[in-house]
Length: 423
Image 1 (cartoon, rainbow, N blue to C red):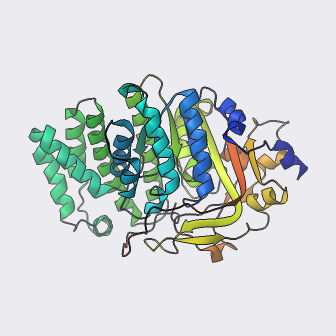
Image 2: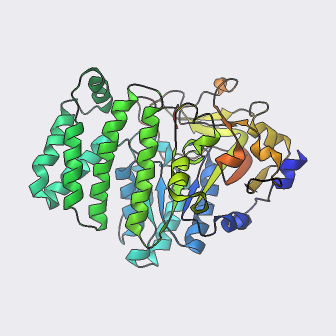
Image 3: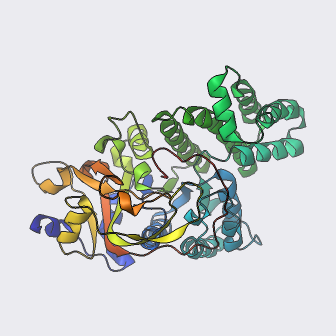
């Protein structure tokens, strides 16, 4: 335990993040994780770090594990004078699980970011964007609306894609299941839509949003076809889409723009340092490191030993505050708890003889998704992890509390659970 305590840095206030900012240095991409989607402390510390990156290091945009259309409404609330309160934009999130973004902790950060942006010219405001792939219909409707206003000559191509998906009853799950059984799909129509929008939209913010919605349609079409087959393929489609979106955002903001990502540890931490790689899975953290080099990327993970969390016991179920039991014996969280540290920051040293051995010791690392069953702790909910290779820094919070959702979850949704469960 002395080895762990000797590696720990104090963590009581945002000023204690100084060593992490020094580690970030000139890196362009900082990916900040969370060990669950429903823990207030992860959101609060992630926000504190992001505020410092924006204020002190000129980070220009945030990409989150959320849908592009919903997050675009938040982006407009943050960057356009006279727009709606960010709370209203976040409250409007309707796809389960809404508590991931429609919560008081995100509202607090977004109101701060709106105030920050008000004092800056339009070209220097910090944006807020969704990286995920789920919003097939919302993105398709957004493309149709944009084309009707700005690209009437492309409407026939756009409507071919709309009509193709309408034949499956507005149900992406039904689309995936049907295309699994027959050679028919909307892939050709989506390729046509993507090409039409890509070549015809101007290089302004509205045009970029239209192109990104078309990219989401293409990614979602591939994702839902892959999802029905199970296994890692749909996971990889999703994380590759998120990595591609991050690259498009960096290019759009230009001039060496620096970006922050908010996503679950399972997306942020390098998959090659877990058992995900042996299962044929990649993830966002691995892809960004491979594409941009480890010197230009910093991956930050989180962990907790016990507390409360907002989650549901099944996909689409009603979210509730659940108890997070003490971590499983011999896990990373149990070992850190046994060290006696209530809060700590770990900045991972470079590999070599001087690095404490615990950084390179494989241990189970808890991952709580939007679907969580505490009774499975004895055999599930843990990802075998080599901490020093999975992350560049790690924030430890021994006891944590649940987020505060803005509203109850809608009931009756039957959308298929993501692979792996709920992250």
